[in-house]
Length: 212
Ligand code: GRF
Figure 1 (cartoon, rainbow, N blue to C red):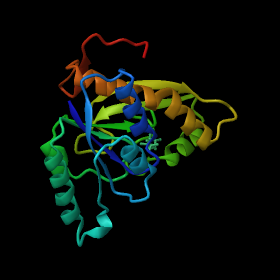
Figure 2: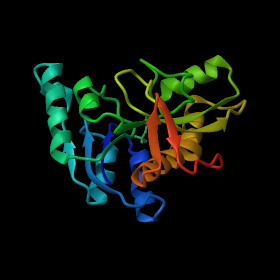
Figure 3: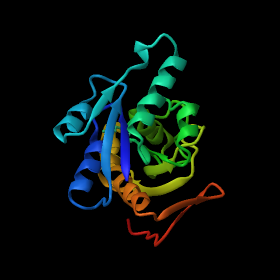
């Protein structure tokens, strides 16, 4: 299975995918492209170090958003991935891309959807709202991308308990370490091995185990 990984920042989720392919936690998969909207994303270094083709294109380089959306679609069609993985990607994925890759785009979100998600909930902001809300548990979610924001069918989730002394930063780091870097590679491996299907907006996983 060929995957294209879309990034905007540090690329720790990309690195988790690269490492998981190298150590066999993900089988039958190769990363055919890393795309970033951000020329300064460290994720680009990670991709280059792993010998993965990189394309960087910022929306700012285009006259209109529609021009950017068309260019992004062409970049992805040219790479022809079987699956697109949003790994810390802050670009709004245009409908034309979602329509071209139905149930073939997945995203990692740093909360237990449907809590603390949707427009404006990204990066550290998610964890700030979680701590403001006084909840006792958060975590991460991998879901298919549809036309909404964080509304596609949920594939995997993993909870992380919140500590009294947590800051947004410490919570973000623990959720990345204990949840994101585990469930994103796992979801990719399940999809690569044909274990995932969507029926009536619900994900069915063959051989699903709760001890993830
Ligand atoms: C992570 O918290 C991830 O949940 C969110 O973007 C943040 C940075 O991810 N989507 P990465 O280090 O760039 O993979």
